[in-house]
Structure formats: structure tokens, C-alpha cells
Length: 217
Ligand code: AMP
Image (cartoon, rainbow, N blue to C red; front, side):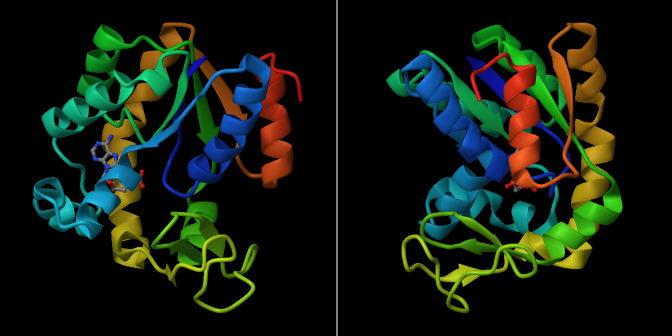
């Protein structure tokens, strides 16, 4: 099953995508990689690769990387063997041109639109911490690491993303509204969109979208 997880920053797409991978792989008996363009860019920045050097200032500011660079990256990733039966796209597409490009090389089955008000986004992202090594998300109120600054899963360093600082969060929300929110209608008119209320806790949201996709819970 080929899925897009759509929604503003802080809707929980990354955490929910990790859960969806397990559910889909069990239901379908095939790999369904979680593909986060943001995580790919952050890994490139950490590795100081040419891509990382090109996109670092853009990510720090909360603006979007250009469509061509992003689409080329996703086209290459979706062409790999493990994405043949399905995948979860998290953070892509983020513009209409990206969505049109994707439709040309890998049409998706469903788009989950995770809906959440701006106040909740600010609260969630203000407390978010991320493991530099494995990318696991923590939250200083809802899900603290057992040891301050250390990942429970791999022992890596837990840090605050530069773009989770308040000024970058406001920019990311503004960019979301202007450039990404139009995708909601783009996919709705194609009959692909499923609205999911992202305000409840993770377990409830997982149950709701699992049902909506007709997957065994
Ligand atoms: P995320 O982890 O999805 O919040 O993405 C972090 C940052 O990576 C964004 O604020 C953008 O600067 C960049 N980025 C991620 N996905 C895309 C995309 N599909 N198009 C353009 N820029 C992106």
C-alpha cells in the first residue's frame, strides 16, 4: 500500500509513520519503508555531503528545499526494491508540483490528512527532542528519555532540532499553510484523502487510521 502522511509540522506524522510500518508489514507481508524527506536532508547535513551543504541553511530557516532536488531524491528512493510493494511518505509531497511529479512516477493509494490546530503544534514542537543517531522522537512533557539527553533506544545524543526553535516553527507553519495545505484539496478531489483527527494520543490516532484504511488492528 502506497501512502502519503500529510499534515502540518508537529501533527505526529513521523511517530505515526513508524507505527504504520509495523502494521502494514504484518498485514501485507512485505516491506513498507518509512520515507521522510526531512530525515534524509538531516542525515545529509550530518554527513556534510554535497546535498547536506546545499540544504543546511534552508532547513535551519524553516523554508522548503527546491522541488527539483526533492523530487529527484524521492524518485531515486522509491525506485529501490524495498519500496516496490508500498511505502509511507512523510513530509513529501509538500507542494503541488511535487505532488504532480509523484503522480507521474508512483501514484499513491491513499493520503492521510492529519489535522491539528496551530496551538497544539506550538506545544508539541516546543517540547520535541530528537536522537541524532537513530532519529527517534521524544517529548519533554509527554515522552521524556529515561536519561536526560540520551536516547533510550540506541544511546545516541538527544537534541533539539534547529528548526524546532519558535521562530523557525512559525515560519514552517506559514510555509505549510501557503504551500502544502493546497494539497488537501488536490487529493480530496481525486478521492484519495482520508481526514484523521491528530489531537488524541498516539494509540487512538493509530486505531483510527488503521480502521479507515481497512487494515486489521
Ligand atoms: P520535516 O522533518 O518533514 O519537518 O522537514 C524538515 C525540513 O526539511 C523542512 O522544513 C524543509 O526545509 C525540508 N523538507 C522536508 N521535506 C521537504 C519537501 N518535500 N520539500 C521541500 N523541503 C522539504
